[in-house]
Image (cartoon, rainbow, N blue to C red; front, side, top):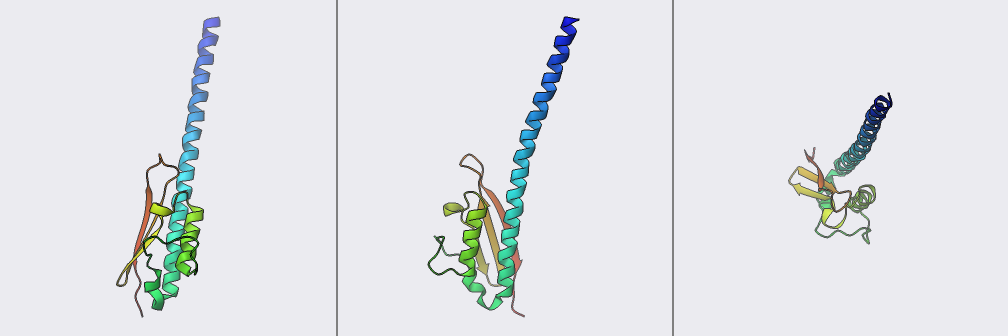
Length: 131
């Protein structure tokens, strides 16, 4: 009888350890989903601003080495700062970029949780043309 109790406790312990590890994995995936959602929101936000400011579309292209905060804060600079403060490690080499090629605009938002985490990208491409 004592052996049956010990085996029952062992099975119960294995189940509890499994549930705890599943909860840890669930928390990790929830945080990843949060960052992906924020990256999508930020990319769509700058595209919306560019649609509203179509005559000045060329001013949104990101030059290499854009600093945050920039001395003259344009809409693009404000957006770069917002990305840098919202997503982890989204500055420096991982800074967001906006590439404009005619009416085609490509917005890339990158982040990584820490140095061991792989680089995550969210890329949005759209056409913004004058009417």
